[in-house]
Amino acid sequence: MTDTQNEFLDIVNYFNETIMTNKIIVSSRLQKKFDREPDTDPETTTNSLRQENENEQLLSLPLPPPWSTDDFYTYIFRKNKDIQNVLFTYNRKLTYFYLYNKNVYEVCSVVLIVLSSSLALIEGISLCFDPVIETTIVTLTISMSIGVLTSVLKFFNFKNETEDIIKIKEKVNTCSAKIFTFDKKLKTQLYLKYNANPPTPPELLTPRA
Image (cartoon, rainbow, N blue to C red; front, side, top):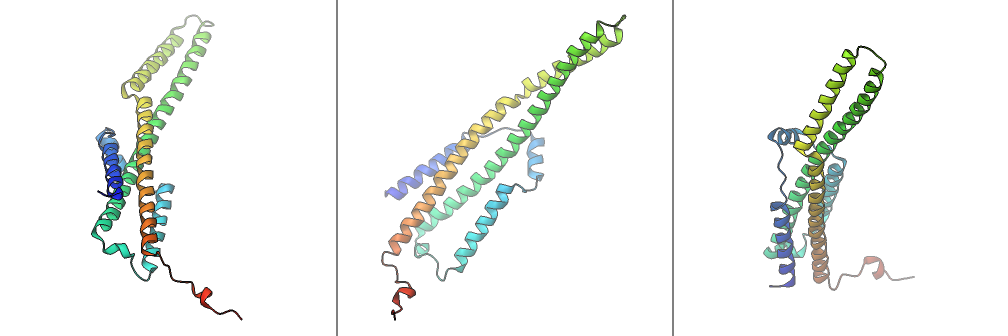
């Protein structure tokens, strides 16, 4: 095997390991919500515009790259593009789930802080009243709400899930960087190989006065 084949296989193996061993499990409701979400992420739009510009540049070339007739390199570049698309889609999904868990956890945490502060305030005010039946009922209600919210956070484990998603995103980004670097490096090597003796620019051929 050539060095290119070995490097390509290493990247494919790393991709398979990244995707297969870093799956996240979410509820069907959240998955359906993500599927209905329009793709309006600024990063997604930027990448789409960049891809369109690259496609226009390729189409504007007078001839296709010389290596486009080679089945081996054609397969590699097509596989690279497929892998990048999969990683991009998976990263977008991870970002959506991360923001969802983060927002839910932050909202619940803020509510817990407000309820805890209110509970201390009401307990202090209740000492000034006799009887304290009304304040006792309010205190019990707030205490029950705090217990319920705490149990919900512990049961769904939003904080740990958010941390796990961050770790998976790091691996996905690393894999995406590997395949992007490999793709660009291989194209550069092929360009230099097929253009070992590039033609002289016309402006250099013009005789000087």
